[in-house]
Image (cartoon, rainbow, N blue to C red; front, side, top):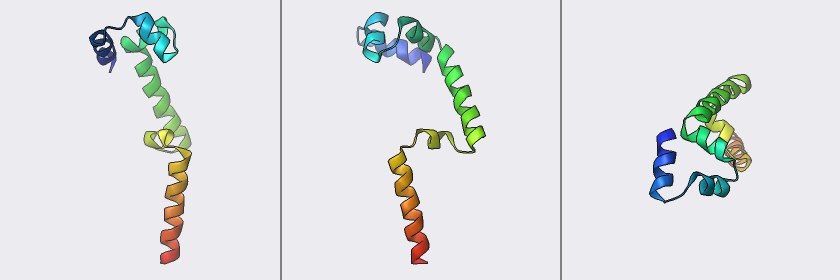
Length: 81
């Protein structure tokens, strides 16, 4: 992903300042994403969180509404048995 951020940014003709303003982050933070520094930190954090909470990484991103819908479907399935 690190190379893609820079690639797509330059394809759109955006400077680092412009893109960082659009994202609401500092130029330094954008540069760290572009260089892959924050990606490694993010993946490490996600792996640790999923292990601590005993959930999948996908579960960390799932909306509460989707989780509620899944729980309701499970209860309906139980009721039908």
